[in-house]
Each structure stands twice: as structure tokens, then as C-alpha cells.
Image: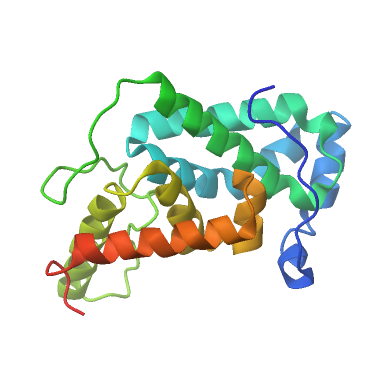
Length: 208
């Protein structure tokens, strides 16, 4: 099945601990407990959507692809050996779906900072909904987030996917290497180049 492959356990103990609660849910879901899989869906759908959105830049496409990732995961769940690796595993499914999606649609140039940017309201990675901010500060933060979104769209697909996963979703480099199927050194190189590209795109747009 496209996008479905075995991912071993996460590398570091502190990284593993945050996923320890997935083990029982995965085991129950593998035994046919639909509510357990729904709990996994509720836990990770927002993060998967945000990763996908960062890669395809269209909320409707992102919603469809995120949904497809969970459908594929549900169908292939019996092959997952380590429940703590569920998030890494479904990330890889989602990333591969995005890659296939991009290959299957007409080639379009990357957006410039002057172009529009698709958004879905509250669930995109950089949206701000914290009512504790003063209105003027909230407007400033949202405007900055919009500029950063546009800058991310100027990145190449390889650079964009690692930047989105690392800087917007907080995934560790070792985790990303498993998800995208490349060595850790390659992930670090792509992150470095992606950050350099973002600095160039944002130069003169955002104050230091």
C-alpha cells in the first residue's frame, strides 16, 4: 500500500514517552475497537492536517489528504508493530500522499510573498486564537504569520516538508528522518537550506 511502511520505535526515551499512551489505543484498534482508532484520530488529526497543509497550501486538498492518511492507516494498522511509532507511521503515510498528490497535479510556480495564501481559519499551523493577546498585538501576530506562510510556500517541496515538520510541528530531526526516509544528515541539510531560503524570502519584510 502506497505510503504504508514499517517505522521502528522513536529513538530517544523522552521522545518515546510522549507517545506511550498510544500503545494501548493501537492494540485495541488492531483488535477491532473503532473507538480506540477514533481516539487516535482525535489526538493526531490536527497535527497531520497542519503538516499536509504546509506541504500543499490548499485547505480543501489538505483536508482530503489528511482524511485519506487516516483511512490508509486504519486499513493497514494490523502491520504496525510498535504502537509508540503510530504518529511517525501516519506522518509517513501523509507525506507520501502529499508527494503523490504533487506529482499528479499540473506543475505550478511557488507562490511569491505578494501572492495570496490559502487558509482554513483556525486549524492551520500558525493561526493565533489566544484571547489573552491585546487586539493590536493579535493583529500584528496574525499579519506576521501570514507573511511566514507565504514564505514557506516559496520553498522547494523537499525543504518545505522538513521545515513544516520541524519548525511548525516540533518533530525532532531523527523522527523526521524516519518519516521522509532519508538519513539524519540529509534532514539537517534540508533544514539548513530551507532556513536560508526563508531568511532570503523574509529579508526586508519582517524586522529582525
